[in-house]
Length: 241
Length: 306
Image (cartoon, each protein chain N blue to C red):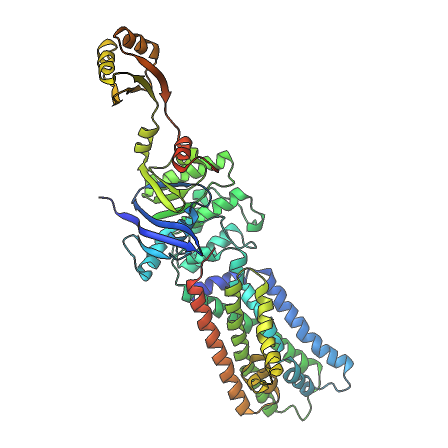
């Protein structure tokens, strides 16, 4: 599996789209702080980081299909999956290695975006008394739990890309899968079930305490494991055309 | 006895109500160049995909290098190189980078195998990206990937599609070289029957998912051999007349009223004269013999042949 991961990283690191994505994320992260500096009346790091927690924690989840597109979905598009499978590689290992590479890429992109965001805010904005070490620890623990949620999104997107193959329909299916159940539960007056869904968890993390972080982590892990198992099982029996 | 590289027993693959491969029994021995011949939709590609593990059989069993369980088949497939339909590669990578990707993925220790494979298939594309390759270059790169890990068995689905005559000849020479020098077993499907006839040692004719005939190149040659056929009222008497009168020992009696002379016998008029003078009634004299294409059309049914 290590060999497959190394090979996929070799490939992705030669793909221009990956660097465009990295650069775009860095520019976006920088622009948020630039806007705060230019448009806000208070130029505080505390405000900037609070804005991330309140509004932006769920946004990276929407980018996760891109990580799948860079690795697994691309194999359908370029018709290369048959080269992997016909060599007798274990399909389960192949599926898991693709997911692992997507997670690694997500971490790299997230690291660059977060690094640029934190760095630019610290450089451009002012640190006030509210910007304490406790606040910083709380910020990073919340971001850390959200990363588990992003991994769960990768598992979901990977499962959907396996189902819908080359068709970009999988991206649409992904957005449907993460937003539609919430609407449906609200419509059916089953909103108490929303607490088991991915997107509402990001909102709860923003305002929640450590207990909430634990609950969210459990929801993310369970979702991630369920879709990984489903995706691997589906992939194992799938015809590669 | 030669090692069996591939064996299938009652192999079936259905897609809904459509049976693409229907109780197919086939055996390939080491060193064979087996040509799989059939119309579009006959089940050739489905069979090749099952051998390569891209699709699973509905029922039946198969063995690769004597292995039949899932793990054994997986390991056996590492000894197979293949081109199934059009070669697929990453469009933004060069030929070298694409092969390097597969070298890394497959854990091939010989770092020179990429250069060796490219040289073997005669592909020198430099840093040109795969997306800018011609069809012929793509086919060559597909073949380079197929031989990257020195396979014992090559499964090739229409490997000369899109190649110019020079390219076709080069691929043929490569396949023969692999077979003669390394003993590589080759299973190849193609619609270009004339090309197949130049390399195949065995033929399998497939129709509606069933293997209707499997014969060696020698047997096929025998069946397609040109002959002179003579229809008479008494074939035994006619054979004696020709053997004695024209000193033709190779006269073959086919049934009571017909006999056959070698195709290279150049004087049918002399044979007729001898027979008539000996009181044998001659009703027909004609030359027979078919090429691979005619044989295939006769066998398969004659319509919708590409």
